[in-house]
Amino acid sequence: GQCCRLLVQTPTLCEAMRTGFRYFHGQLDEFVPRLRVEHELASISIVPRAADGAPGEYAQRAFLFLSFGLASWLAARRIPLERVEYRGQAPAHAGDVDRLFQAKVAYGREQYRLWFHARWLQLPQVQNTQSLREFFGQAPANLVVKYRDRTSVTDRIRRVLRSRLHDELPSLEEVARTLALTP
Image (cartoon, rainbow, N blue to C red; front, side, top):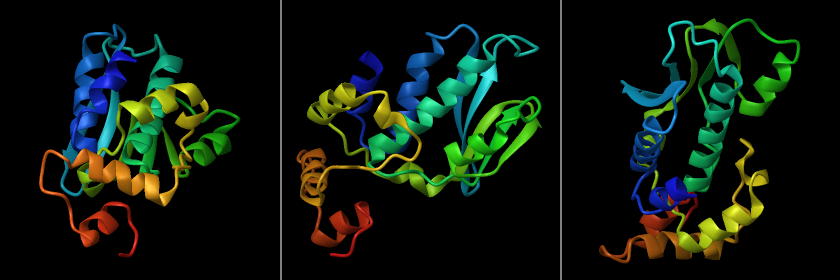
């Protein structure tokens, strides 16, 4: 809860992710979440603190999944993944993992990692304290990676405008671009 209250005060998805990962850096003993940008791709990775990384495998996978779900909620859209990397061998239910992330999962990697286009980091963070209360009321169902904003277009426009009250209000074209709609 405390971390999410910090996240809804950030202007962009990038700032929200960096804020969240800084928060958890001091909270987690077994691994460190990281956000990196390399050319046009960004990644969320889970770096084990122990050399073998074996402790907390489930926690690492769960944190990656929940971070992605939360990022999608903060931006009010599902962030499309380019690829997913998992430690270890493919499980018998590997197809389920592919469907969960809607991307092909490569196994046998050093870390758990999600790759996506870096441009998505510039999306505005459009949630607020009111939508956070609603989010908590619907958790964990609203963290599913196939996140869809069930609010009306009018509510989404209001959230964008509220997030910009301290600045000059955006034009119709800017709001449309933010929400991936036509003016």
